[in-house]
Image (tube, rainbow, N blue to C red; front, side):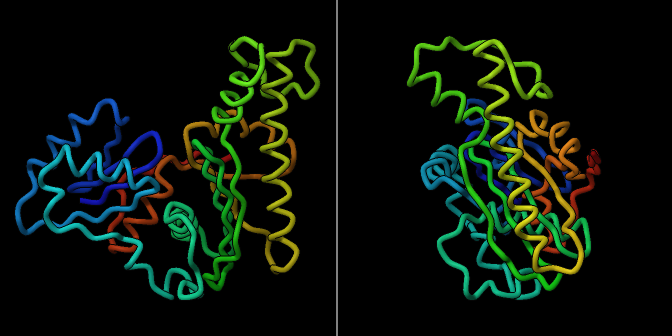
Length: 245
């Protein structure tokens, strides 16, 4: 079993079947864990030690053979891996997942609790990236610090808005897309071919149309991080869910 433990959801791959759930509904994960045998290994990546411990406590089979899949990343996947420290595994696996889908320079963007941008060159050198609060994190922080009431924000295409709610939405979308464009341009300066951009994460739909208008073509893949993890173990996710913009 391969399991990706994120901030809000976990995903797992077992017998080529990919599943996911929130941390309030772990029943399906528990059921699959009970099917594991003593000879099965559990490969995991986690951005949250607390969530990892929560899952371990709920599933006795996790007390068995657990392997942090990050330890299996080699110079084949990331040429400068020996020089990398203090970086989340999800960033590395997102970039590896992007390189699995495209030859050449790639940039992965994960639009989750945090938005992370990561760049991997055609020579598999991890160049770096950006991290900043994700769409909902920005929105929640602003609403919690002001008297503004939460409203539904729908119009992602309108840049200048009259209502406060729409202006907040436009501001979050604009600063996120602006950061993606800045990273794209910075990465493109020192490489021969422009990078292919891959986006994942639950909030991607807020940004897609704006990015296209800004000239950034991209592909959405909800399984990008897990695809990178599976490729390390020479497995493939038999789900092709790519949306090109």
